[in-house]
Length: 201
Image (cartoon, rainbow, N blue to C red; front, side):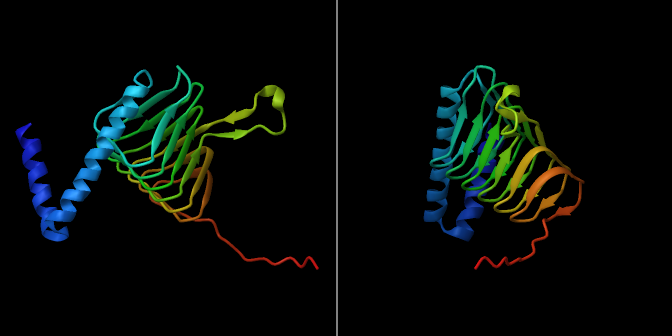
């Protein structure tokens, strides 16, 4: 406990030198509010969420809509503002230690999503492990798969990750990409975009 307090004080002093004491205090109060918000969500879904210390910033929410839904959140996960995490049916969401999720992200889990340690997710990213089954409603309205994201992955802004996707360790997903399938470790993935114009009048 003493070592943790010492590390906190060292960090606050170092931050104060760069940011100024006032802004360091404001920032850390925001972090404290995020930790309290995370504990409130954990209390609401105490049967579904297993976690240690994590932060859930303003207007972000975690929802579990089934008694079978499982949510595992590792140490020091930081989830910024306006992010929605929803786990339904028999879904299992695993977010490993020190993952950073930026503003306005959506994670929808109905089967299995796993995010490895130290992964960083930029704003406006959508991760879905299911699609709507618009062709054959008899088999159920959802087509479910898995999304497995490795360790130390960087996911750029406005990326959409679809079901049946595996992203290897240390991969970089370029901003605006739509990802489905396998992305090898230690690679940069990007969708090539080409402009096209179709005359309509």
